[in-house]
Each structure stands twice: as structure tokens, then as C-alpha cells.
View 1 (cartoon, helix red, strand yellow):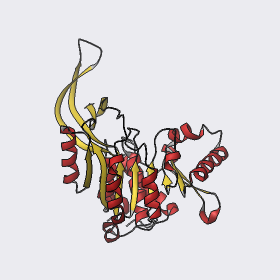
View 2: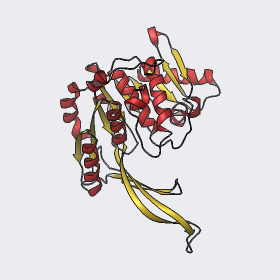
View 3: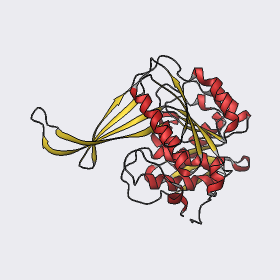
View 4: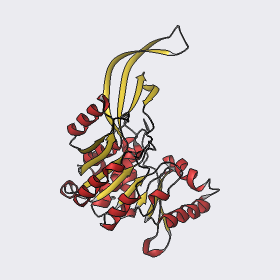
Length: 319
């Protein structure tokens, strides 16, 4: 077993339950052979040989929770369509408990990736922008299941599902349950009161502006953390690892970990793995600063896999 990281036992993780709330998607992959260029346009012709469907978006986050050994409940809204039924089937197959609201005005989000010669040639998105808050009608479900969970994770993909979540954050924090958020957009005010948010560099820059150097970054990050009342802001920095801006003992602090060095094959879903791992660790009682290197290692593992993927307990901690 890896000794340089906190490692809750399998039994400890199996007793923890994470409530994942957000935008679930169906990730569809078409694999094929590329033998020629189209005579109609200068594009490759892909002869499809097989297809695959995986959980995407918040569904992939829930799957990551599940494969690490904890229990996941996914709360999301889907359309009344075939993609929703396939999504529900995948959730059941992976043992993820689902609270699925149905909105006939909504298309269940589908991301189709066409793969040829071991690389993605094109991605086609099927979705529509809702004209209303699709999760608003599920607040009662949230309140009902909240006491059965040890952490709440909001997976915001900017698809309109998490426009108004302050009440959910308030309820969870009042119950002493940690709240983790993968943020989107430029208005972070709706995330106020969360335990930790996990933006990447471009997402943070959209909110606080570009920074001239590390000192400037620290100032901007701590200012945002204080403004939102967060315990921590975890910045994912690609090849530069991660930075955690927090306030241990009431004093603004900063912790950095280098990227977990390994061959990068595909970064799809790496952020899902990072925040899922953080949620599982916090639910198990691991402190933010100790959970960060575990999440960093998990992210390093998943980028070596193709497409939306997850990390298992043995991969992360050793057998």
C-alpha cells in the first residue's frame, strides 16, 4: 500500500455515501477504421466498427466515487428520451443510486466522439439550453436524502442545471456536511458557503482576471476564497500540479503539489476524478491539505486512460 498518502481502508470508504448533484451526460463513442479521404470534402472517412457508451458529466463523477469504494447517489434531471433510459441503465449497472427528475422539454445531453486511428476526429454534442431551472423541483428530494450522506458534490457543467443552488449549499452546511463544487461560468457568488471549489486555471482567470505572478495569484485566490466564505480553493494547474488556498488556524495559507508524472493519453474527465477523490477523502475525515495529494495522484492516473474514465482503490492506494 502507498505509504506517503492518507489511505482510508476499504471498509471505511464503503461506509461513506456521496451525493452528486449536477449535469449528467451520456458519452457515446464510435470507433472505426480510417482508410481514405472523402471525395466530397478533405475529411477522413470513418468506417464504424463498434460503439461504446459511458457515463459522462456528473454521471462520471458519481462513477468515480463508486469505483474508489464509496457509495454514490446521483441527483440530476434528464429528458424523456432514449438517452435518458440508457443513462439510467448504465447507472444501475455500476451500482450508482439515481434520483432522476424527468423534464420533457429537456434533451438528455449526449456527447458523441468519433474515434479513428486511436485519436478523436470529431465530437458532436446533442443538447438544448433549458429556459428554466431544471433542478428547482428536486429541492424536496435533496432535503429528504441529505441526512443519509457524508458529503455533497455539485458538478456544474454550465448546462443550466445548477443555476440556483445556494439553498442546497445552505442546507448541507447547516447539517455539517462538506460541500465540494466543480464550478463553471463567471458568477461564483452562487457557490458562497461551500467547503471547497475546484476551478482550473482558465476557469479561475475568468473570475479573478489574469495574474502576473505567483504572488498576484495568491492574492487574487485568497480574496475570492474570503469573499465566498470558502474553507479552501483548490486550483488544478495541469502540468504544474495543484495549489490549495486555505486558512488553517485562521491564517491564509497555500500548499502546492507537483503533477503526478506519467504519460498523458487523454485529459477527458480528469477534473471529475479529482473532485470525486476529494469528496471521498473529506467524507472519510481526511483534511483538505491531506486530501489534495491523493486527488492529485488520482488525476495523474486517469489521464493515462482513454476517454471518460475512473480510478479504482487498488490503483490509487495499492493492493
